[in-house]
Length: 111
Length: 116
Image (cartoon, rainbow over all chains, first blue to last red; front, side, top):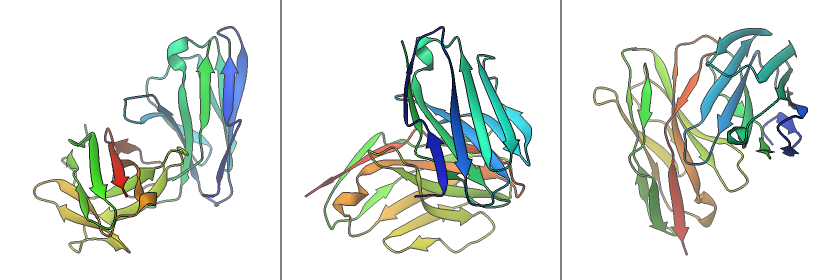
């Protein structure tokens, strides 16, 4: 247990569905991150939020829409995804100058 | 742009032996942090060890230690007395600066197998 939880752990969706991934951290951190981990590829940073403000969008397609209502919660809203979006989506959080703590991930399959 | 390279896609070690995983990085910054993360089959990313660039002393955490060569931009991980539970994918990562929200740049990973 790292203090970062993600739900759901597994998600299967069709290309026309709309779904959301949720991340919650109980560590008092002020920054939260979304990463995508595909097979045979390094982790790819998607979004960064610092004190609820988005500070980085790593050229992510608009079919991925993040939301950060407060420093403890982070969402990733998904719509009209493609099969190549199937991957493990990891959430992480951190405090100033410290390392990032990761959640267990959501395994997403797009049919 | 910062890059992190792990040149060993796979490594194996006998139980109780020592193994070293390699990592090199490229940066023009002088203030940064380096990390090794472990990802076992559960896919949970776990921090193994961290190194601040301004510290000359190599970081150590129990059986895990690093060899940090700043001039050579090298950051290798040594695992001593390897255990079956050490089997995992190991990622080297770089982070710049001191502010929160700083991005982590990861290497491609090294899959470590521990043979009984």
